[in-house]
Length: 311
Image (cartoon, rainbow, N blue to C red; front, side):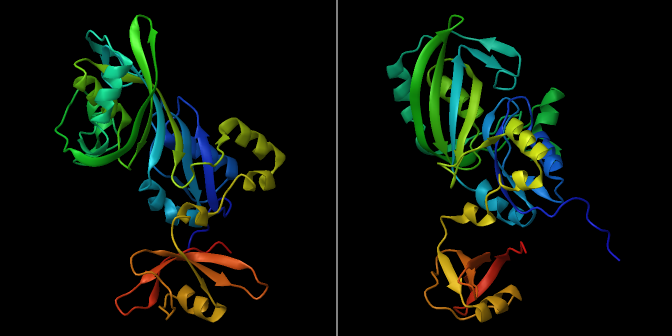
């Protein structure tokens, strides 16, 4: 007989506004405890210094985590020029200084060179692993290892403001980028292009696709909801299907949906061959229930790719 799972069966996605000073995993564990949830995961780490959107997936919604990991992100970042730190952000120690006389024209011209596809070397202070060990763990031991450059894509790198703070220039940018982009590395590379040094002093993730216009909830508001009861907490969740809003929808009669839910492919017209689809079951009462993701198989039949069971 299997062990009984502890906690509540919670399903859905929470768009947390992560506070500064917490790791993404620490934020996840706090929220998981508030919900007393059996299963939860986050969709890509934010640095402890960073704030902003951190989608947390509960229960069956963890099956769509990869879609959010792979999606584009938007960041607001403020960089201080003339100083480099060992972590590439304000949480680290200044280890090198340089002259930094910048103008808006220089910054705009240099930032345009990073638009499109670029190669980026991940920072040592990151969660990537080398031979089974996190890079940031090696970095804290004073060990630096070779990292392979990764291909990323920068859709937008817009200068919003240039000001001076404590005698050094600070520039604020909005960056829209692909998965796997390290904003700290982008800032350091921009500084190198300008012949100086820089580090991140503020970083906020404004959105994760497809939640460009969605509201986030703070940890404080979530704690107040928990005091009001579990229904109040539940009301803060959005559906697993919301993460897949960019995928086409296929609506299935109950009999065909029944085959799909047993893992069998079915013949259904109008299914695109070049994309996974969201599958919805047409219920007797006229409602439509999301049952998961599907795709055409080699025989031209709609086959289940990932089933979602939230009943």
